[in-house]
Length: 193
Image (cartoon, rainbow, N blue to C red; front, top):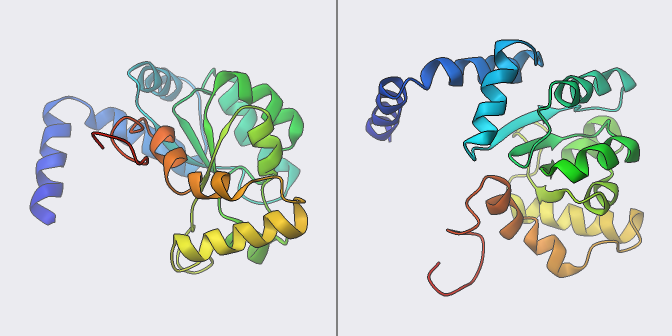
């Protein structure tokens, strides 16, 4: 609700995090990771927070600069949840994997817009958590079940079944909760959750 959003904004302002939120938001919009922004982002990660960022969306090799900026500024971390990462190849996933983090896969939108999608098998094999997202309304599916259907089809027809049914379900339950640091509170069927 509006009242809840206003309270959250007020708490953010009172806690002094507003400046940091604006810096991270602008970095995410403009893809600029340098100076004060990287200091704020590294502290954000050190505090155990997640940063959800559209990274290298598309297939142009020029998009790798976004990944390189994050890597060169020590911003590849367990809290980084990269939406798309479509332009990344095995080399980048192998560099990033040991540092932790996650990729949010949107196969329908990727295939519709770019005729290709993220190499999620390479991301998983490098040690990254793979989540599934429906992207935005103009090019994504209407909900996660639709995206799950596309992911299953892509997995069977293009990835030779690299992901089990269980792994596909974890992409919409357990993995996203883990990616944003909420794994102890949701995303699993377990006592106390």
